[in-house]
Amino acid sequence: MRNLIPRLGVAVPDCLTAATYLVAWTAPTQLDPARFRNLLAAIVIEFLVLHASALYGFGIAKREDRLHRRAWILGGLSVLYLIPITFMAVQLRTDGPILAFFWLFTSRFAFILIHPESAAAETRRTVTLWVISLLAFIVGTIAVNKIPLPSFGLTRQFVASLSMSGHPNPKAQPPQITIAFGVFYFLVQAGAKFCLAGAGREKERAATFDDGQSIG
Image 1 (spheres, rainbow, N blue to C red):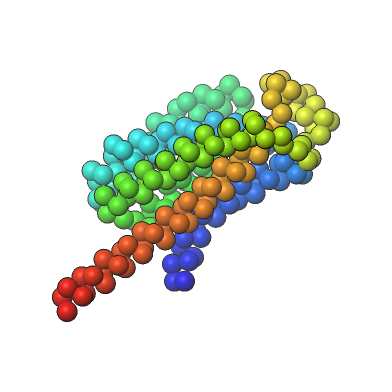
Image 2: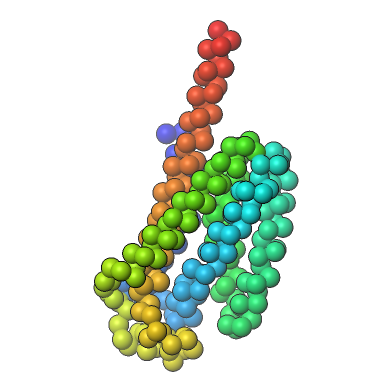
């Protein structure tokens, strides 16, 4: 129980993101068209953040034990990936992609600062989360394209308002496909981070107990 609040801390951002997608699906009129379009673009941005986590987990984290150095590395990664995100924002004439990137990037790597681990443990945790995220992307993409999805609040009138507001041909793909994917994907992220944060602490306590037994 004593670690419940920190574990919830790393899961809450993704829960909030999933809840936002759920609102966009069931009551989209609560969001203006520009904000709704940002949610559609955020899935592409999340894929870039997922790529950044692979780079961090496979190539960088295992070489650096010091937490402040990892923070600097993450800062450098954010600047690197911010370049294409800024280009996207300029093309769309909105700062939505930039704000979404910072939110998703922080959500992805918050557990590194909240639950710091050794370099080896950090690498395992980051890679595990990356694998879970990739599987969620694949399974979610297949599911939302194969399973008939209700439109809920995404009426024809609302979709038409997206078109009038500059949405690129919303009839090409029903928006509920992307929105439903967001609900599924970010709920998986929240659950995975909650479990991984707890698993790290359990291993740490087990190792401490074993050391105590050895000394005794």
